Length: 327
Image 1 (cartoon, rainbow, N blue to C red):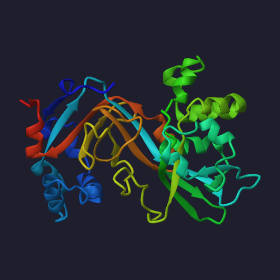
Image 2: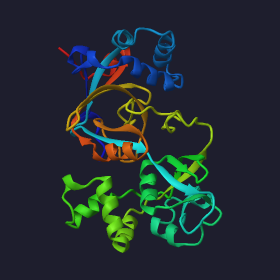
Image 3: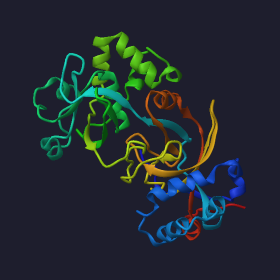
Image 4: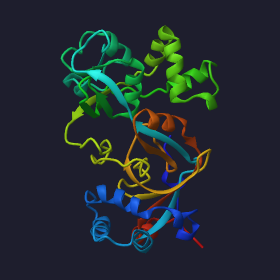
């Protein structure tokens, strides 16, 4: 349930209250900010973007023109990670490449919700909507959870995929289902644990994946250079470990966000809110983009940590929306 407005607090802080603020690479954050700030049409933001384009001192830029705002809705902070998967596939089906990656059919656009995951994967009504075929149904399932990725073809070429729609069914966590069944405890569950269990138990594993009725369709993206990250919610390439997915009901897209993540690998870093996600709900909920490929996937899968997230807002906006001022 979403927090009511009276449950939300917004406290203006001082930069001295941001742990390890001075040690960060602010130039990296400014570079990420410039990727999307030209798309911000509000006068406060567009003026700051124009200043950012004049190559200012990065740390001084953020300290002079922004104020940190701690936005809370009563729920504890939770940081997770996401990545851009890379699968092996082909443009035609074969004995190895048997699992289709679909674009969204017109019928799915007109009906919400549409068929379930199980119906889509077992029916014969999706012919002609294949983008490519891949060799691993489990990796395909997790490609849908990430919402974007790459398919490496046998000739070495790569297809880039972006989110292209969904069947409209609510997402159900297969990890939570494994916990409910008593197979794992919550602290044991990760993407790799789920993958391993499904592969060890192919029949029950298939049924587990069908427990999530949500199905994501893709679109082929040809305009993004291979060295750049996938497109985020702002339709711009996102930056590894500088882009964070947030709930835009609390955090404006394009805003710098200071991350204080605890856990086994603490992180103190200025990022930019450039993406969203269906599971990212709440004022202190954030998903950190780790990068592309298997190694990034393993790191992202292990990330589930507490901490604190502070949004940097233009000075006038920060004080105008504050419910509490730092003393």
